[in-house]
Amino acid sequence: MLARLSRSLIPAAKCAVSLSSALESLCQPTASIPGSCRSDPGAVYSGLVAPCLKATTSILVSSTSSSPSFRAVSVGFHDHPNLVIPDYFTGLGYILSVQAHGSQTLLQRIKLLALYAKICKLSAPLVQSRPPTTVQTLWVNSPHVADTRVVLGSSLAWLKVRSHFQMARAVRAGILRDLWAGALIDPTPMQVCFPNPEGGLFGTCWGDCAEAISISACWKLVASGVPLRTLAVNVAAMNAVDLVTGLSACDVILASTSLREMVGELLRANAFRPMCKNCEHLRESIAANIVDCATSDFWLELGLVTAPTSHSLLPHVCDDVFERTSSGKRISCAV
Ligand SMILES: [Zn+2]
Image 1 (tube, rainbow, N blue to C red):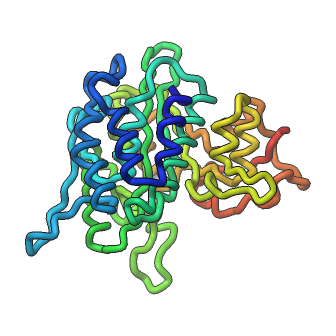
Image 2 (tube, rainbow, N blue to C red):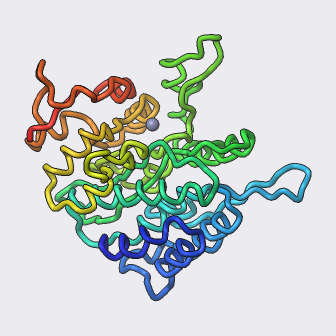
């Protein structure tokens, strides 16, 4: 599955026509995946992704009326019968999510996330957008629940027209509010934590994070307390090209067959992004059983990283990564 997706999407991702064609072939009814009958990638493709590529925009806003009208697509996405897909990058994640089927290893999940990060970066100019800051994946991790579904979601990429950005943000916040209105406090925990020096609200709003999509797509699993895992990575760090090797972390991970090598590469690239305080608050408020794989505890338990020492192998790991979480700690690679 990964090789097929990489072969079709990566060479096409710098050209709107080629990418649109490659995505269309993934969304054909004949390409439907067993177990994905509740999804409708064709609707996301024809109603959002293809028009975005054609119109070179990451969201669809009607410019004919005096008050701009926002156009999104609502589809079945795993547990959610009618999840709103408001922007190009979320649509891309949806199409990739429903391609994944069958049991997957952690290594395969990270590869799919890396592919998503790479396609977001390569295709962002096609929709005249910056790429999203982070991409994230969520999956079931329980020996008692045979559920191989995966969600890929992205943070909301900045849009040049501020009012359009706010429309897209409002849609994503509304997805969360429809499910867990009581959990969405105002100001958000990130706004409390990072106030504007001038006194106004500044920090991350509800709807900005990838979790607005992924946790909502799996809301029944969340509500039933099924153990889930999440992993978020920074798109810029994943796509930064190493001047010595000429490869990005995405390239290395997509070619790798070793989980240990992948984790080392993610650390070297400073790509891990632990949950922000908004998402930590949401997780606690809705009693979601979600383990964050972007924190040190997860990889320490797997024996793939070592506890920090005064001679860290990764002195360039920035503190700002760990400011996003109260539980994240500096980690270094064991290899
Ligand atoms: Zn967050």
